[in-house]
Image (cartoon, rainbow, N blue to C red; front, top):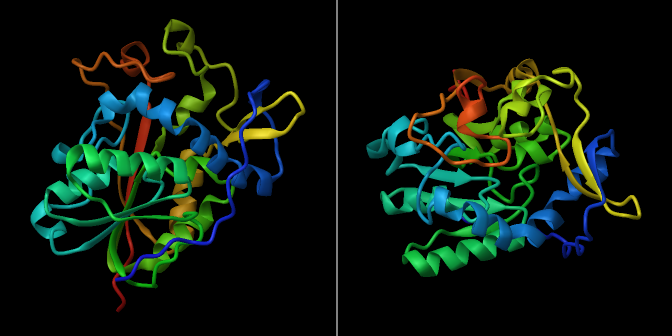
Length: 285
């Protein structure tokens, strides 16, 4: 299987944010803005969360669920004979863990800044992850050429047309292949993004699908993150011809004292923070 970079224009510089909140935005602008945000914030993100994520560890979510324990992609002895692709990989910590286990994994991300961080982690760990830069809605990957595709909080929250990601994953998967993705649990969107007790009282409608956005002083969009209900996710998966095999809602473990934005032991004791969807592409009959 041959991997190559998609042709993407340089990311624009990101000005300081001035507005934070929920607002309808042009879908084309919302779908294009995230790359610039991640390019500008790659260093800061790894500085803040790198210790929790690890350099070569597969963490599905702020709850700390690891693939080493969950095995949502399947048994390692099986994965070692398959082609695995991570989309929205960031610095490719998850793929790096897979490579360390002898799995043929490749990582992709729309942000060149995040992939540069992946190369830093390669050098630090001595583990090389093949990477390429591409939008998850338009992968430079041959059809029916990959056995497993996954993402941990990558790609899906940052595009308005989530069906395009599922359709593209279904295209590159071989029949019988697996697509696993973790996202913010939809219920959390009804609550303030606050790790304290203030984040335990719902303040907006669960059905309000306006994205969370940030703009600069001139009103230019600099960040957009999209909300879907559980039903939206299920329908998008089924619309791509995929079969939902499992929906995992990790509980907050007693030993995890990490605070990550609105995720915390306080909220995790009462509210689900993550939803992990395990899907497959049916075998051709």
